[in-house]
Image 1 (tube, rainbow, N blue to C red):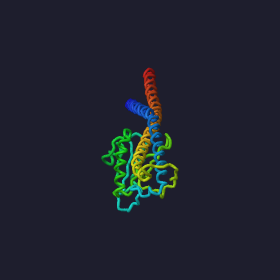
Image 2 (image 1 turned 90 degrees about the vertical axis):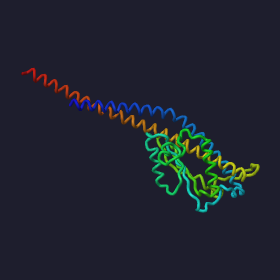
Image 3 (image 1 turned 30 degrees about the vertical axis):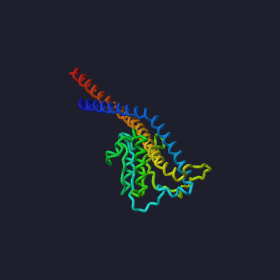
Image 4 (image 1 turned 45 degrees about the vertical axis):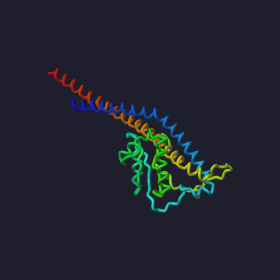
Length: 270
């Protein structure tokens, strides 16, 4: 019985240590949520504004001649940017990304985030510290590769922030897109200089960079939210386990005390 009590005390101390860790990680995640959410909203606002600009430009028929609006010939390859987290202990955040990735085949991968780099190879190590300059460098490279016909399809696998409780993996297509398929293209009375086509060709790399940075920041906000929820759940489970073990420990201790009293009473009666 003494060994059982010692074992129970060891387990309680171990779970209590884990509880302190989950609380600390939960606090860190909580401190990052606001900043990550603000960055996500700002980048989405920029991306949405850039998309409206693209729609306005593509309403002009001259833009159909853009090198970025070519029709894929089927000879090019596919490329997918994969945005995962920098750390684990975030519930199903990273697992959902890699589960979605299993449905993709014959595609060149560009990882962003430590977990993606660890699994897929060299890429952009940190999703949290991924900058606009890095997004612009990547966007210029992607635009050049698509315009030259090296790739027929370029997409990004990221996570959609639905709420602090819900995050969903998604694949967004960056290329191809065309003026014919763009139902949001609206004619405008604005006059563009030097011309719609020239401005469109100049602006598309900026638009793609904005789209990439928006996806990365939304994914990071999703990672932080998922970690906060996971640590809260882990803390609740740890508290429940400690409570159950403490009750078991008290019963075992009471049993030993009762046994000792019984032995004392029995001995005094002889």
